[in-house]
Image (cartoon, rainbow, N blue to C red; front, side, top):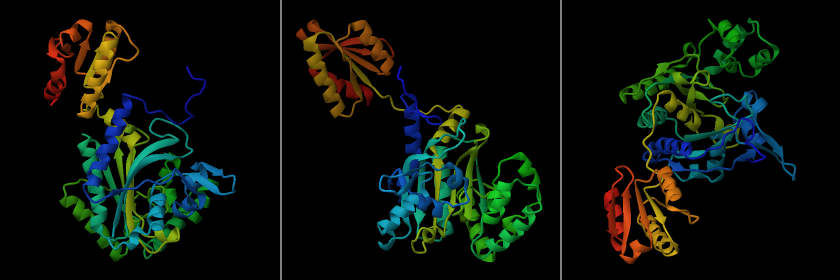
Length: 420
């Protein structure tokens, strides 16, 4: 056993469980790849200022949860707590918005870091797949992303998730609502930290999960009642497009999400089988973020879906993903000559697209067959000196237990046809 353990609040992905994480990432990415989204990868750390400006100085992410470090050159960096600000920064730096094909549609996958109190479904290191559509203000784009996330979850077999939808208005109507909400909140019995938040970003108070705060928020003014005509029309169009696509959602006038950059459309995917950490993903429109980080006006929309949370949702629904076997053929050589011959056979199988493994370490038949069984291989190829003298190998079907002698020069084609 190692002296060292994974840091608190983190986890290691190891086989066979890691195969489910890979399958979830692939399922989320598949509809994006077929809808014009190109893959982007950004550094695991960025300037602290990027997140302070982009995510918002008043958010818990920036004030309490970022992992920060000072480089030897004196630069202040942060491990990325979310993906959108980094992706937008990279798109602006590469001038993708100037190539004439807007929106710029990008998807990404990676690890993110927040200093949180660890519990099931909430970690200090977590994995997300995200998508961003940069540079176009169009309700169809908002609807597209919601529909693609719904499609991804359904392709995994998930059914017990809900889509919550709201509009946060824009710079025309939100200030009026903000004032009304501040007036309401100042009359409540709130702690000093929360009262400070009323001045900086009162919408974040609505996102407070504490019961004593939520009870006091009954009767708080709702943003939906303050939307300007343009925002209301935009929101109605998003809802109509989602409905026409057969995607079911719930209007949630209290949904604000925890990041400052959202405008207009905001949404969350929740799964009721996960307890307190019920959000499996979410996103929305962030029309002013580009200007916040020094870019031009680029209205944009995006989402991020949690891979770890999605795996927990699958477990909650009792869904076991049908994953291809890591190994289809396992070769067991008995003796030095068989070792050379079967190693060449395994290499040829792999080149022809068959997942094959080999009994390493010169073990005896009994031990090697145990390894073959543990590998999950459907077929085992065994050869000893007598087999090779006759120009054959023994091919065993691990499911039925049946075994037959097959000519050595025909075994690769035989296995390919059996596995096809």
